[in-house]
Length: 461
Image 1 (tube, helix red, strand yellow):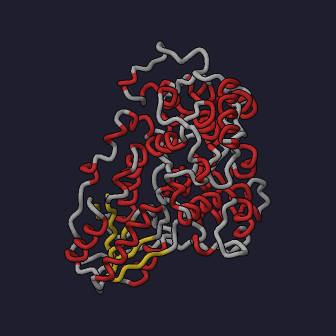
Image 2 (tube, helix red, strand yellow):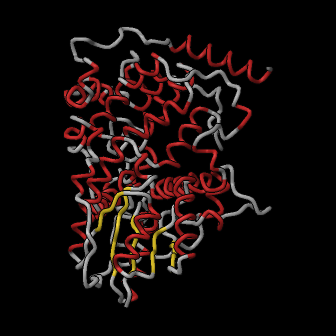
Image 3 (tube, one colour):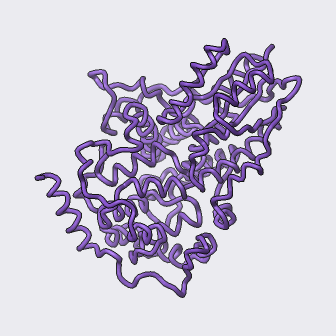
């Protein structure tokens, strides 16, 4: 009856948590622990702050089944070895992750623990399908989404596991850090109070969000998800990234909706699989996260960080829909997916700025930041990634705004938002009075021509 250490990461839920379920089934004492480790320490301001909220909520959920959430800070291996020594545990378990830094950490931990005679075991939980289980006809991995989708769409997906009603507690609980001492909100500064009004934290909130989406919005999802001023999406990206709800739970809800004849259900299922696709590519080609996935883009004359990019970050490009999108994220911590495409295209094409600049900014400001989806999304819009939008497909933000925000509600809402001025750093000295540029910092025609000329030179160079 030695204790089991349950190492939690992006899986802050009781329902459909395979590692937690396995531990509960043993009947042995279970010690849940979250480590502010060498990977988590690299997270940006908004993800770190939102993580703190998720940990607080999940700690309360664990107390409801007779457990506690132990918090420790330090290198993952050292913390886990220390906990093994303190508690007499002989088993450490966790749910698998697939991005390079997470995998490297986990592989090292597993090898070192096993060398010490500790049982180290991981479980499938974060995606629908393990990356090594989806192969092309020739045995490789998919580099294009549509055939990937066709391969997996009819596969059986196991039903979500039920939440344990109780966990056996150890005789003595190990010591824990205080969450407040981690100061995870420090980098958010005054923006935390603003964004807090718009987040949906914890497993219960995630389940309620899914239920409301299935009941009221999924039928129109295929069309409504692109309408900027319409609440037409599930909003679950925030909860999926911290594991407050599982992909399997979302999949089965979508499947039931499709069986009920809900028109948008298949599109919703495709979006869940798109998330899988990003993690599969991050597993098979780790360079997706940090380098041009297509190496022939390495010589493209993108600019590094620059003054135009700073204007973009501040929502001061002079283009209404781009600036509205950037201001939305300061208030809510999220950005409409269609708006992400427009803002990303403008940065990488009209402003000729390296997609990595956008990747890093989103990693700092999005509460729904997912490292694999973020990198793949930026490479897609830039043209350098797998199954990417061709570089010569340059979105015109104005015509896109007319199509997807015809009445202008989205643009007015965020350009006129008082919350935006509450959330931004005081050092910007940006106010309604200081205004935005009367003309775009780079005109649409000018930027398009410059980008296409650079693309042609790349093709013929």
